[in-house]
Image (tube, rainbow, N blue to C red; front, side):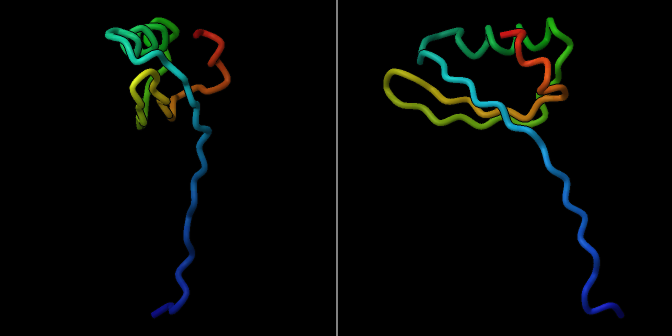
Amino acid sequence: MNAHPKLSVETATQLAVFLANRPGALARVCEALANAGINIYALATSDTVDHTVVRMVVSDPRRRSCF
């Protein structure tokens, strides 16, 4: 048995989007990504009273100009 198995690590580019903490703000971002044909693979949020930071891993981060 191999005491040191080889590990495979995959890297991904993360996008961070700063949004006003208002109804529909995240929906508009998701709609823009959908219209550009970009899939969201992972999403995490961190919010305060007035703004939210949305971190996403998407299928094509180079096309982030669709925002």
